[in-house]
Amino acid sequence: MLEALSDFTAGLPAWAQWLGIMAISAIPFVESYFGAVIGILVGLHPAVAIVAAIVGNAISMLGFVFAADAARKKVLDRRETLEELSPRRQRLKRMFDRFGVPGVSLLGQTLLPSQITSGAMVSFGASRNAVILWQCISIVVWGVAFGLLATGGVELLSLR
Picture 1 (cartoon, one colour):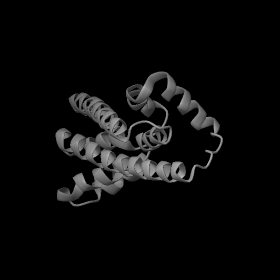
Picture 2 (cartoon, one colour):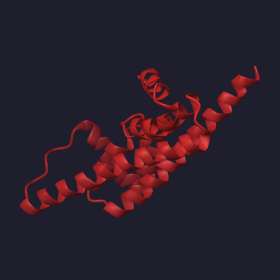
Picture 3 (cartoon, helix red, strand yellow):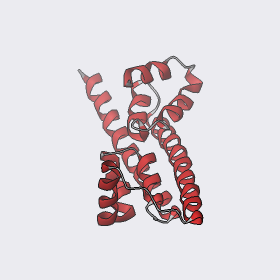
Picture 4 (spheres, helix red, strand yellow):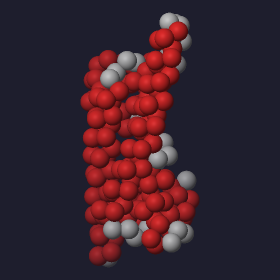
């Protein structure tokens, strides 16, 4: 899949490749970290690739947060009982109860995409604004870290 996304981005005109990185970074499981790597591998300047990946991932995450917040408000307004959580959501809920919004935001991307973890945290009752803040911090941290690793890897390979 990453190869197909890389081919998609490389096939765009040079001036539009950053838009391709934004678009693919909005895809859950690609996120800012793989988006930044793909951007660097197709030849974008690392700063452009990292920023485009972060922006694409953040926009997608915001959509999930606002949708989850609206859904939660509707459910609470109707005072319906919430369904029993699936095993995956139970695990995420335990992480949320243990680590809070900052911990799940920073560590949750090792298990699930930011879109899913952010929506889940809001549905568990976390503050929408706190989730947005910490998810944006997490997206930046992961995007920059993987972007720097990719830049170092590309430079290392070019030395050979």
